[in-house]
Amino acid sequence: MNKRNEGWIVITLICLIFLLTTSFSWAEEKGIAEEKIAVVNGKIIPKSDFDRKMVIVNEQFSQTGKTPSSAELSEIKKNVLESLINIELLYQESKKDGIQVDDKILNERYENWKKQIPNQEALNEFLKKLNLSETGIKDEFKRELAVQQFIEKKFGQKALVSDQESKAFYDSNPNFFKIPERVRVSHILIKVDPKADAAQKAAARKKIEDIQKQLKNGKDFSELAKKDSECPSNTKGGDLGYLMRGQVVKPFEDVAFSLKPGEVSGIVETEFGFHIIKVTDKKPATTLAYEQVKDRLAVNLKKDKVDKEIPLYLEKLKKDAKIERYLKES
Image (tube, rainbow, N blue to C red; front, side):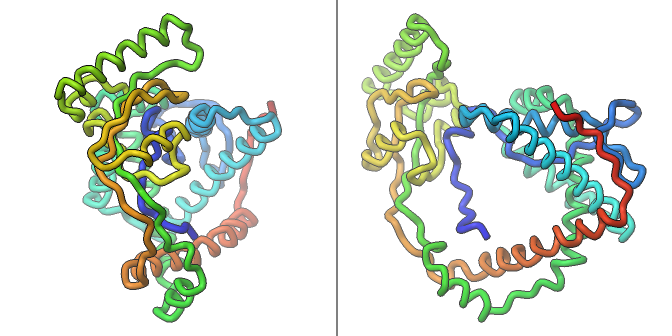
């Protein structure tokens, strides 16, 4: 079970490309014949679905600066393929069960997803990167919702959690409900490519120094972030939300946690470039009371129960299914 699900934004993700942690089993574009990566009970999973997932995986690795070994990459590919097969099996079962996705729920799901994207240009960039249309994404949300409804009907309705059970978990796991010190941070970023030469780095430093002068002359931080910052958070005036220690790179963290609310840092250099940081709020470490978490805790405990059932169910489905895999070892 997740210790907490507060939704804090991690700078190393928000400043690169968003939504790449989203896990989709992308639908086949209608009318296009292409290479298959698997066949599940006669239903082809096109290789393009697999390739799109691998694009996401590769982006995640590039953000961490790590390169998987050949053995790790082979295992990742197998896991990606199995995730596509699992979703297809569950989707087929949802259809057998007569699951219907309400258009209103589908549209709400899609619109909520779009709200996470700063603007149309960013959406277009994301779609282009994965060679998708908005219709294709919406079709996939429909599959996702069908699977969710099926799982809830088959397992969720039976996975009851009593007050005694949730209270016992709360009492036995006090560390799960401790919230460390947090700071709400805004920043202005001028990017510097890790491979930049001295001249490029000097040009970036001059840009951040010019911004710093404007701040000292009374210019509004938020407005300058919107105008000059090269982080997607610029649409929010540089606001990154509340951060905990360990969520951001060390030089950024050290400065952010040393500032008082309202204070603005000097120029901070990290592997992403040059930052100017402003702390807008601080929250001390605390422990959430049971009454504050009991509803969410019950939901998470129920999810844990369901999550234990799904692999067993998939194992049974796979025994009875005809599955052909076409993953080539590189």
